[in-house]
Length: 77
Image (cartoon, rainbow, N blue to C red; front, side, top):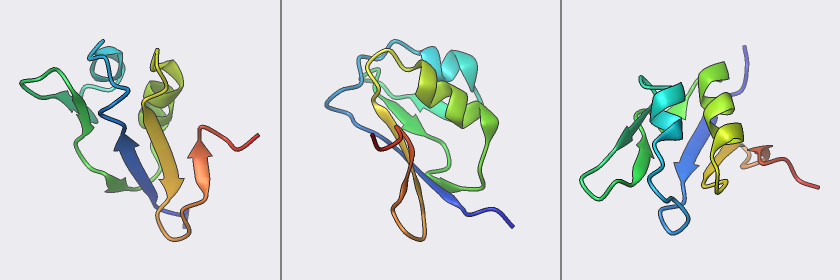
């Protein structure tokens, strides 16, 4: 069984481009302030969520392993 992920959007970085919603409409929503948030913050690994994080123009989406906090995206240098 794969490790669960914790998905967060840094609302201070999010510019509301909607790329995450466009690429993963079942995984992200924009609120009234056009700020993104994950539909399911603690979840099983999902390729669509990873792709959305990789395509965020301001890298506002982070993914960590829920149990350890180890980064999945962005990866540590």
